[in-house]
Amino acid sequence: MRLLIADDEALLRAWLRRLLGEVAPDAQIVAEAADGTAALAEIERLRPDAAFLDISMPGLSGLEVAARITVPCRTVFVTAYDEFAVQAFEQAAADYLLKPVTAERLAKTWQRLQQPAANDPAALIRELLAKVGLLAASAPATEPLRWLRIGVGETVQLVDVNDVDYFAAADKYTMAHGTGREWLIRTSLKELKEGLDAQRFWRIHRGTVVRADAIAQVRRDLMGRLWVELKDGGKALSVSRSFAHLFRQM
Image 1 (cartoon, rainbow, N blue to C red):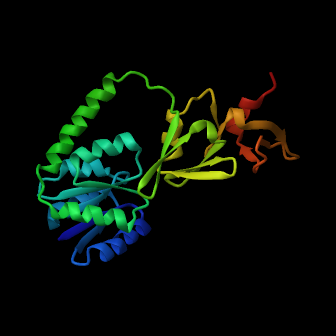
Image 2 (cartoon, one colour; image 1 turned 120 degrees about the vertical axis):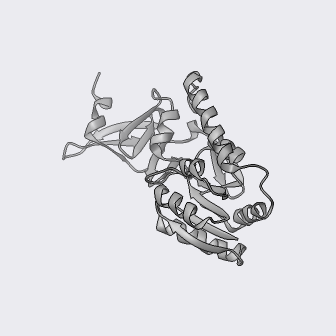
Image 3 (cartoon, rainbow, N blue to C red; image 1 turned 90 degrees about the vertical axis):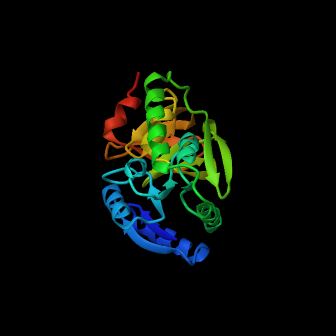
């Protein structure tokens, strides 16, 4: 089977290529692409049997690439999106993989790719995008996020947001920190912040969101900088000037 890998991170492309070499030694990687536009061009030119597409890429997203494919090519999404998005992608793709990809999960994807496709993936994705567009226009405001669904190997762990003291950006992902614990969340801090209760979770820095109830005090150092100290006694968190107004005396 001839495959294409598209991801804007070279290390992730190399990791997926190595895992494919382990679980699918007969597979042939015919091309790699670092952005969606190049991925679409290579798919149209080389006509691989399947394409592994990152969701978030420069140029075109993985979804946009899949929707524009005009040649026979099955798609596998490699994504860091939340559970709702994953369920939607599953309707339109041969499979989806959550980052970080494991050999065990990739082996299941390879088994699915050996089975004949029942429908045209591109047509399914175009239909899915149309439905999502209609839902987005009419959907009511959602309740603030209460539970974090965190993938751990082949399982999903539910973490109450009240157990998180603060969130810190980590490239495309987010680290959630609680009392003596931390969790890796496969979505960006910007996306995560949109689902949190803004009255209870305050952004204090471009890369930090803290739960207000977890704050013990805020101190100012000799340079005039503000630092948030947490009730659990963890490390102090820097407050940028843009968010210093949150702690003005009342």
